[in-house]
Length: 291
Image (cartoon, rainbow, N blue to C red; front, side):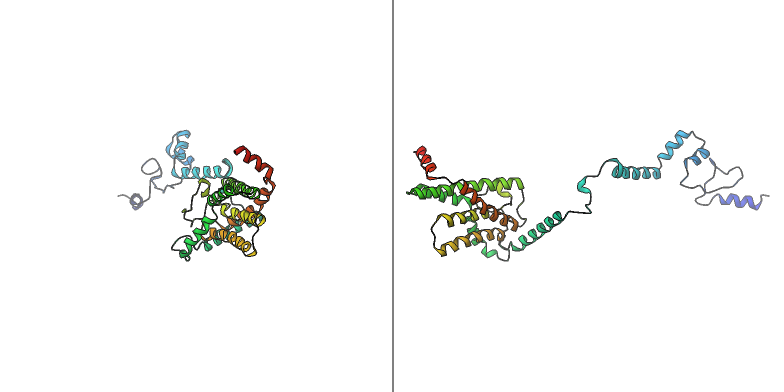
């Protein structure tokens, strides 16, 4: 008759999760034990009796070792392997100048978007958009160039020809300088702008600085310095220059800093025009060559 211990031992082998300790069946003492899922390579060597090389290979191919090796290699590549790019690093101590410039840029974008009330017909001041576009044309370079060339052609006096020729030179200088700065800075126009401007060129897709603002400031100084105007007309010239710059922001063409720098640049462009002023002697020699 079999003993109860043998029966209970044989029945215990049918439980779920129990596996024999040896290669198969019960061990030498007739007992079964639970095998851990995370055996070390030394256990594999003792139980399976294989050579150390194959055991190490099987252990390295286990999912746990693969996951561990992947995480360790990732940490190595991120920490000590290859250097992390500087743009991905978080700057814990930014400079005061960087903070000031970032704050200025954020205020500039916010204020420009709030003031772009004529950017489209559906805006809050969309009904004023045709008037703003008329002001835009009054500050465009092509009408000013054509007007200066016509006045130079129709002028009879030497003084009038001198003034109109230097005005024409100033307008050409303004186009060159603004185009160079725009090509260097390459600041995009505001997102709410509609590219329906009059007679645009390749550099006009950039926003900094405002060419209308530079031209308005330079021409205003030029007219006030070389034309004899009554006081109301002088006030109108100043108001026109200011209104041209304001229309650029209201139409959404430029940011506030684009117009502000444009006024600053145009104001000092006139000093360069005065330094390069063409005298009557140079004018007469140029007219003689043309004849």
